[in-house]
Image (cartoon, rainbow, N blue to C red):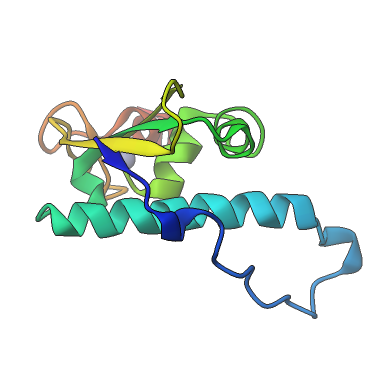
Length: 140
Ligand SMILES: [Zn+2]
């Protein structure tokens, strides 16, 4: 289990505002949540690389977070399906577990999933077979 370091605690400035967006599209709350999620992804990628796994696509992630803003954003609102979470993190599995810890932390493990030849994610149960999501899209 890896605890997320001090540098994770929202010391990252929000990215520069994009001034050519329509005003009706601007949502500062959503931007802040996305920013937190992307900082978390960055931290997970950094730790995975330290552990000798530069490719998050082959790692499953168990995420423990007492930070309700992050867990709510991840689990309930902006990312309403497991598939969209996996797509965002480019990981075959992101499990958000009840944060009984006082700090954000995560656990990484290698996946047994196989590379889907269509989406290139490790999301298939058998080699050379499409993942369930691609199967649905293709209509097989
Ligand atoms: Zn696929």
